[in-house]
Length: 163
Image (tube, rainbow, N blue to C red; front, side, top):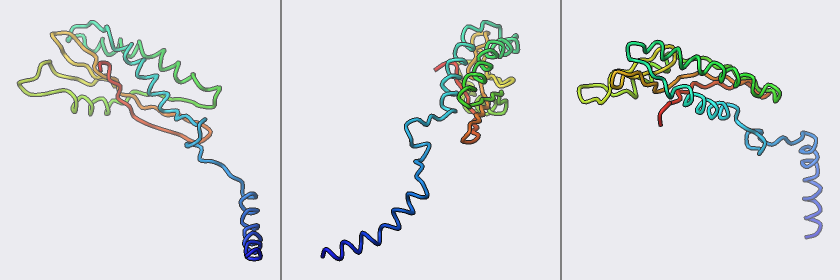
């Protein structure tokens, strides 16, 4: 019995040596220090869009000016995101996603004779709706790209203003 154990131990020695020579690298995404860069950006954008989209008081006829106001309010926040983690090796790029805004408006704005509010429009990546003659900002659609030493990540996110 003792001889059999010694033979097994000697047979496993090359396997152990090969394992040590190849090295071991844990799954980067499963390790505790890995953080998904797009999740950080989405959290940041959630706050930024909420702040930029609330308190926009424009008549429905001036909805284009409301969209411009939202984009103007977001401009410094988007620039801050793009610069936020450069020292960590993460570069963000953010652009408005006009087609995603249109898709979101089609899917989320009620239609028909029983609807409570007026029509929705997606303009330059911002979804607005007419409510009692006023422009209400509903959502902003953005394309986010994060480039790290591990690779490039991309997503399109539609951030609702009101939840």
